[in-house]
Every structure is written in structure tokens, then in C-alpha cells.
Image 1: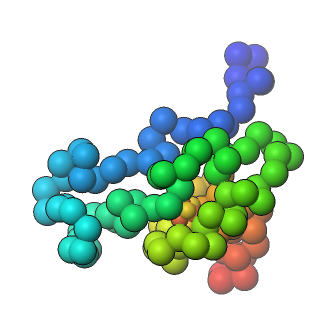
Image 2: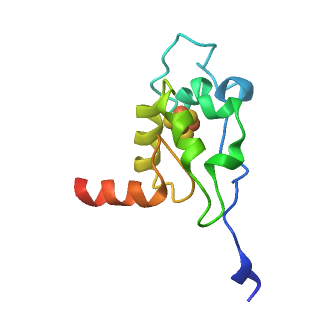
Length: 108
Ligand code: SF4
């Protein structure tokens, strides 16, 4: 099967910069945009680092990514977004896929 060696890796759209994309209503920092669910990404600390760390290979270390999340200003929004959108891969809001799955189960 062609897909058998599929590895998630870093998705192409893992980071969408609403400012760069020129999403209407999104300007530079400081203005909250309640209509754009990705507006928080303009303050994402991981956007300034190596995205590979946030999408480690299976069994790879997540420690570096989680450490960066600890100082990220938009950690809460990031986690909320990942939970709402059922993001399956990578570190979001300082939690791994497995940790997010547990959190979701607890919330149900
Ligand atoms: S909490 Fe972590 S994954 Fe989320 S935006 Fe911040 S640094 Fe990136």
C-alpha cells in the first residue's frame, strides 16, 4: 500500500500567519480578532523556532518543544484551538497528542 510508510511530519499548514495572509480585520499585534480562530498565531513562540521540534518523529523527544511552550504567551489559546480542532499531530499548548487525548477524555 502506498500509504504504509506515511509519517505525519510537519504539516504544510502548521503555521498560518493571518497577518501575512492579509486576513480581513487582522492587523498587527494588540488588536484581538475574535472572528479569526488563528489570530493568536501571530504571537506564537514556536513560529520563531524550529517547527520540527513540535512535530517529532514517533518516539522522538518533545522536551524542547514543551519547554518553549512554557514561556509562550498564547499557550492557552493554542491548546484550546488544538482541542477544538482535534489536532492529532505535534505539540500544541505544551501537550503532546497523547496528553491532549487524555485531557479530552477527562473533559467528556
Ligand atoms: S503554546 Fe507552544 S505550540 Fe502553542 S503557540 Fe506557543 S510555543 Fe507554539
